[in-house]
Length: 204
Image 1 (spheres, rainbow, N blue to C red):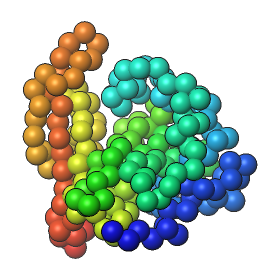
Image 2 (image 1 turned 90 degrees about the vertical axis):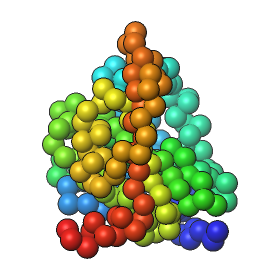
Image 3 (image 1 turned 180 degrees about the vertical axis):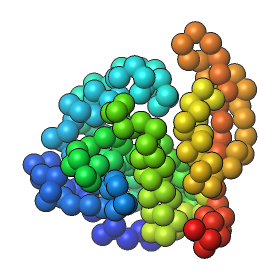
Image 4 (image 1 turned 60 degrees about the horizontal axis):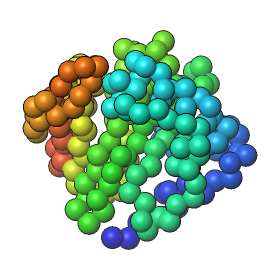
C-alpha cells in the first residue's frame, strides 16, 4: 500500500518547534489535532498517570516521561502502525488531551482508535466526540482505511455514548475481559466501516 509521506511528515518535526509554528494537522470547529511534541512531555505524563484518566483509558501501569519520549522518537513510515495527536483547544489555546491510532493493519485496511481528555474540566462538553470525528475523517479520507474499531471498558459510559454518536456500532462484547479496581468488567468492541461513515455523513 502506498502511503502519502507528506500526510505523516509531522512525525519527524524537530522537538524544539513551538505550538504556533507546527500549526494544525486536522482542524475541527473547537479543537484541532496537532503533532505531539517534546515540550509537552510533562503534561502528557501527568494525563497518563491521573487516576480518573488512566482508569478509563485502559492504563493500569505507571507511565514515565522516558516512556513517552521513546514514543515520540522518529519512526520509519513504512513500518509505523500506531501514532497519536495532541487535542488542542482552539479558543483556550491549550492542549487538553490526546487521540490517535493504537494499531493499524495496513494490508487489511483497518485500525483501532483511542483518545483521552486529560483535563477533567473539559469532560462532558463534546470535545471527545469532535476529536473522534476528526480521526474518522482522517482514517477514511486520507489513510484509506476500510474499518475502524474502538475497544471500550463497559464502565466507561461516556466513551461508548461518544462512539455511538459518531456512528460506531457495537460489534462484540467480551465478558469479564478486563480487570479494573478489584473486579472484572466487559470490553465493548465498537466498529464502523468506511461505506457506513460515508453514508452517515451524506445526511449530516
